[in-house]
Image (tube, rainbow, N blue to C red; front, side, top):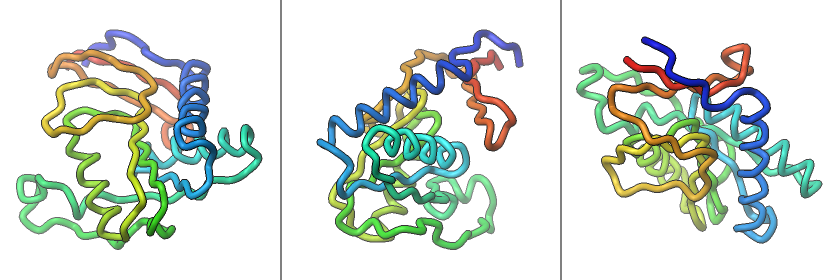
Length: 178
């Protein structure tokens, strides 16, 4: 892999998440009835950061949960004939809530579809919205994000790498040529 560019550094990532937080508050006319659900792995720390920013703006903490989409993937049999089924991972009730799914990169849309399926399996939300740090295009399903940190046109021979300090010791978004 060859590094092509650093798209976001630590400061740019913080500014981007701050903007997304403001957009969530504005679109929903406040934060009543909202919960954030991070898609494991990097969506979870991003959801927690957005919740922290919303709390600093609104003075109210938005509940945060996480979802493991392993069971809901549509490619399980191509990965392993005996998939590992993990327990339900949405720790908070989604029933009649506005659920904002948070993920690092939106690509084909399959991860988002699996997360939506997991949320609906956990209960009937009032609405589901999608927030992503990076939208790189190449959708295979009719899914779009409600909140996008940065649109990055890519080729299929490129990889977008998101690092978050909670898991990777630093914050950055880079693009690599495979």
